[in-house]
Length: 181
Image (cartoon, rainbow, N blue to C red; front, side, top):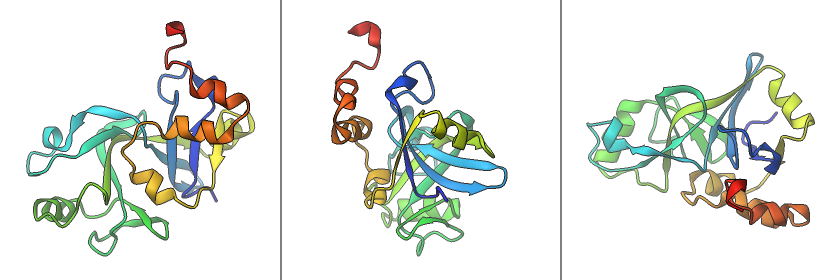
């Protein structure tokens, strides 16, 4: 079971527009495939741009290349958001969006409790396993998934490579576009 795991794109994925330097949280796995959200790539949009009934501004992240015109969210407050889907003991995704809007407007949900995404990352039934076998992803079983998932810092990928050390240290300091080297 991969639910609740983090995938870090191998540095060799630098030509992949969607997943270059990505950190993906896996949120669902079934016979059809696997679903995840890219945690570390902000979009140019905020919730005020896309959800006019909200009175607070939240960053929206690029969840992945699938269904990019749909808004998704993860959170750590299932007791407030009905129909949430459990990822880990402390992290959930989805739920009743009208409740989310109301709770944000009432200031009962803050930025440390929820994160929004446009689109998601999806793999067919065996596709992700094949990519993992091909060493396209580093799997992380970190205990602090919630902190990493709801983190708004962009350097999650770089910090993981630094912690791995060895050959990853060189990649952690390389420019995002190798032509800028």
